[in-house]
Image 1: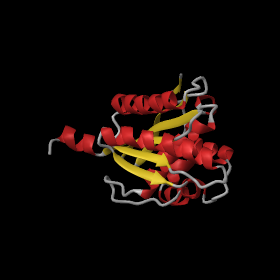
Image 2: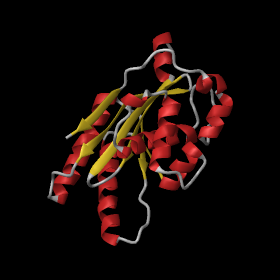
Image 3: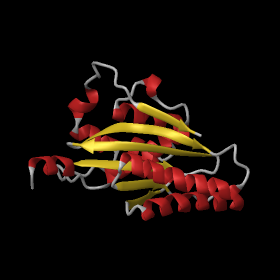
Length: 207
């Protein structure tokens, strides 16, 4: 394998999706030398569309455009939780299915994670709030506060990608992180060292 090809193979790009029928959150992270960094986070705003099938079309096409633009190899999505409102569950299930179909259409490796699993993976607390999840996303990826999305849907999408990073075997150093705690334990210098300069991160609130 050539040097350039070897370096490219050591980089993983993961697209995370938080499905929804009003807002679809998404985040792309890149993992190089076992270190994750944020590429983009944002939301697809579906609130202006009354037709539920138009919403599904927008979810499908936006997911495809994210895949085509950022070229992820892996796709992580928050799976459906079981609530009391059957209609809401049905709508959410459709939104999730359409996003998965887009990933399958582009031949991505697809992984589903329950909300509880994502919360436990990032914080060690299955009852963690969205605010806590967003803060852990910011700390782990070393994102400046002013560069964070104002939508928790976006940070939830990033959280799905990070959860997959923790749960999957890293192809560079053959390590496996099962939680944020594991990552901190094995990367103390990376986590504790303060950032010297602000980092520009692309945020995106697509319409």
